[in-house]
Amino acid sequence: MAASTAPLLIKRYASRRLYNTETSDYVTLEDIARFIRDGREVRIVDLKSGDDLTRQYLLQIIAEHESRGESVLPLDVLTDLVRSYTTNAQSVVPQFLAASFEMLREGQSKLMENMASMPNPMAKMPGFDALQRQQQMFLKAMMGGWPAGALGPQPDQTESDAAPPDDARDMAEIRRQLAELQKRVSKL
Image (cartoon, rainbow, N blue to C red; front, side, top):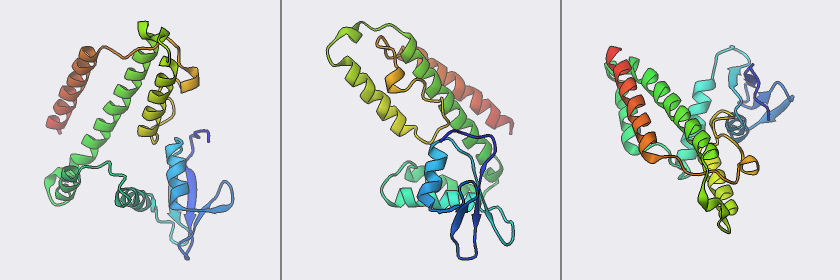
């Protein structure tokens, strides 16, 4: 599904059924999660009151994934999130989380660019192409919910001479970005 600039409008009826206004059919939470993984912005509103219910449904999708054992959020993070609702940190946490995920997306994008642009002597090794496709699929699965393009070239578009990036350079860049983020948070 191609990403669109306008969010996909989902209306919740009194029966709690969710209605996709683009395709004129009912959808499930899993359908909504798939739209988001495909890079689509979604907005869910109550048909009668017009209230925006997007946050509530996104939290429900996350809770369902976590309850099925698809844990992404460590217990420490969940605990700190609960604490942030009862402290003055509540005003800083949203900006911190948004900046952290943006840095992660940028780092992922740079990693994929570096992998695609560096020559690799192992490219001539038998089975290397299959291994590289497997790595690409793994990264795609891990980063499936991120906007299109954040993963770089798809497995069938990858150059055969791609190589892992220089780990030391990447770590230095991550440290620089983390320090920058810490400065932003301390200014808040």
